[in-house]
Image (cartoon, rainbow, N blue to C red; front, side, top):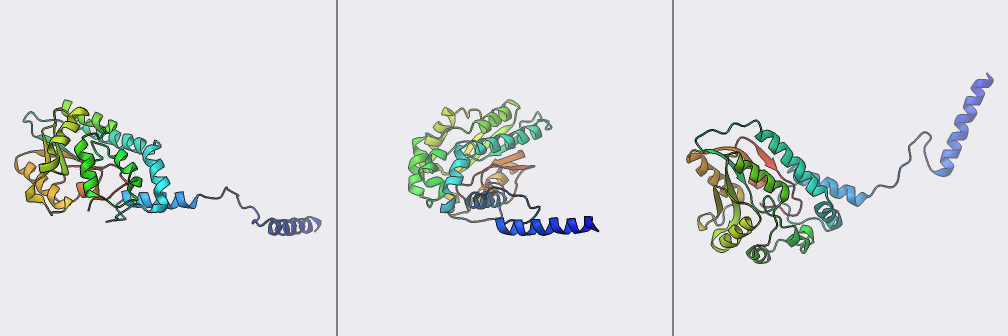
Length: 253
């Protein structure tokens, strides 16, 4: 009986003590969560999973979070991890002797990085400015994304035909893009395909689908398709596998 009374007393004491300090008995305590960072992490994951579509700008409240992600090391780590998965897939492929085994790679923020440009645009918090980006691209100063350059080199060395398909305008940006790619080590690709007048006004999905269809009609077998935008990886003639690289700075419709 005395033991039962003692247990009741202990429970009563804990209840009074917990109420006094504002906690629940037996609950774990933790430091206050950074609600903004958590919210922006959720936003970025939703974007990468293509659950948020057609977004125009990065939420202003996520400026610091996206900036830290892009230049703080996590972005590079994510790229490295994805490229490792691609390279693992490549090891299981057998290249035929007919020279028709192909890969498709996007250019902007797949082969070449625009982080320096978007840093000046608040990592995508500012609206897209076509004239400003064109001026940036014409300078031909985009650095290579190291992990993708390594992947590109491996593909070429293994005998794949690599096609670089970009939404950049052929008439105004072809020379600068070719020079930029070569200066950064992208040598030996089969063809660089830029948007011509025939594809002006067409969506990225339609444009890139038609280009891939043309390659297949030429007899190429597309084993892989790599891009930072979902519109790089949607539509027709996608190839045997697609690989999405991270990019929370902008969305190409």
